Length: 198
Image (cartoon, rainbow, N blue to C red; front, side, top):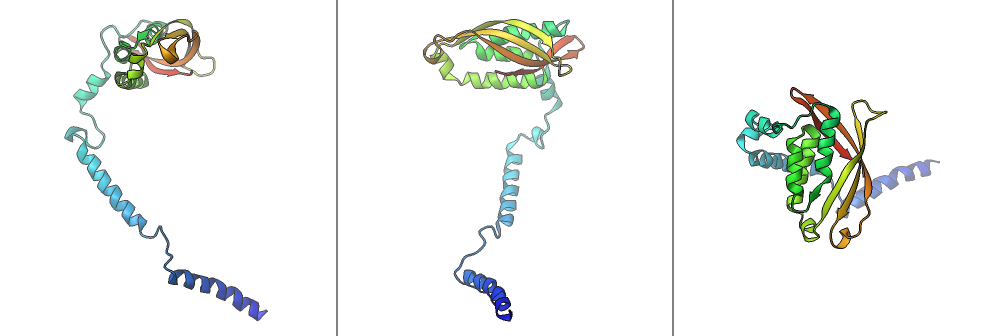
């Protein structure tokens, strides 16, 4: 029995000594210090890359106001009217007009809907595939109703036809579902969330 205990204690100690002697070491030893050094230097580089008024994640009040400014006549008297207008613009565009349409949607909305439209406008400006294929989309609103399961959410259904050359040729009309929200402003209702589901 004593011989077995000695063997069990000696084997791990001997294995550790052999591994150390062979030059095998912990590959993660010392990475914490290297990581924290590179993280702090990366953070310093990012901080110094921002313009002075925007450092620390803040946007000057004037710039923030300009970003959230609605265009004249953007608000509508009812939630349905705001959603109908937004949907009509959203589904009708050509490759040449899609970026301008998205900027127009941004000027009629706020919150997530505005951010999404601005991002789409920026990406469509660089999308040569749409222009080369002559893509166009046309459609209309089929249905609009308050959600039965989610308070303050609306459900819209659009019928859309996409046309163009190549992969866009001969596509059938399709129905699309969109979840949306609206916000009441002093001048009326505007779209604040727009979430296409397909």
